[in-house]
Image (tube, rainbow, N blue to C red; front, side, top):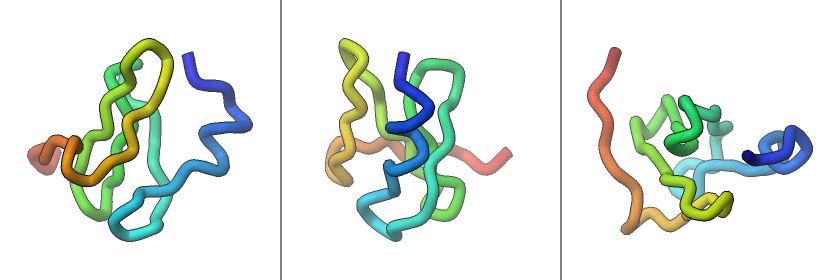
Length: 56
């Protein structure tokens, strides 16, 4: 689980916008529509590793 303090300072590496925790699967940038996975409690904040998500 990512701490609240860490979540507050993390930003999307592509647009520098805020990211939100999405069901412990990863962090989502709603502007870029990218999901940054969390592996072993570590967010993988690499653009080339991010997955494109469909708009809800």
